[in-house]
Length: 356
Image (cartoon, rainbow, N blue to C red):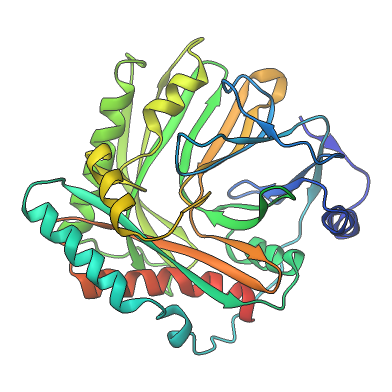
C-alpha cells in the first residue's frame, strides 16, 4: 500500500511545485472513481528505461513500441486525499482554436475511408495536434483535470529529459492483480451534456466489436479461460464511449508478452494493426510521442499489481505553449465532416482546462 504522508494534498502541492522548479522527475496521479492522489518523486535526473517490464515503478511508454518506455522508480509512494472542487466552465468560444487543421484532417480521413473501401484495412485511427498559448501552471491545469474527470485516470508526469505531460484517460490497457488480468475494449464516441446514456449507431457498434474481437484474438493464446462481458456505455467528462470488459487468468506469464499482444490496440491504431500503422505513419504528418502510448503502475504492492492505461485525452506543456492530442476511429461507415466534429468535441474539455 502507498506510504501515508501526514500532510494533506493541498500542503503537498508546494513540494510538487518545488520538484518541478528543480527540474526533477515526478508523477502525480489518481485512478478512476477514487479521491486518492498518489505521487512518486525521483531525486536525480537519471533517465530510467524499461528493459523487460519486470521493473517496479511508474511506466510511461510512447505510441511507437520500438521506442523505449520510461520508468520513474517507486522508491517511496505518497498518498493524499483530494477534495473535488465544484469546477464550472465559462464555456468560451473555442471554435477557432479547436478548428485548427480542419482541411488537412478531413483530407486524410477521406484517404482512410477510400483505403477501407478498397479493402486495404478495416479501421484506422487518425489524430491531430493543436498548439495553443498557455498561461496556467501545470498544477493549476492538473487540479482542473482532477475536478473534471472523476471517471478517468488523471495524471501529471514530468522528466527533464522528456518533458511535461498532463492527461485524463478513460481507457484501461490492463489491470493485473496476482494471477488475474482485466482489460477492456473502448471505442465509439458521443458528446452529451447530460447523464443520460446516448443511443449508438451502427458505425460505433461495429467499431467497438472490431476492437473487442482483436483483443480476444490477441489474448486467447495466453489466457485459456478468457471471458467477455456485456457492452456498456461509459462516461469520461462530457463524452460517452462503448466499453466491454475482458478478463482471465494469466498465472506467472511475463507482463512483456501481454503488453506486446495488446499494444497498440485497434482503438488507438486500427485493424489490421500493421496496415493501419503504416497508413498513420504516411499520413498523420506529426510524431504522436507519448499520445496513445500507455502509462501507470508497474509491479506495485510486492510485484502483485500492474495497473496500466492508454494515454488518451492528454496534453504536453512546453514553456508558454500547450500541445493537445486528439483523434478518432475511421471505419467504412465514417463521414469525414462528422469525424472532424468528433475531434472538436474531444478537444473542448482539455482546452477548457487551459482557458478557464
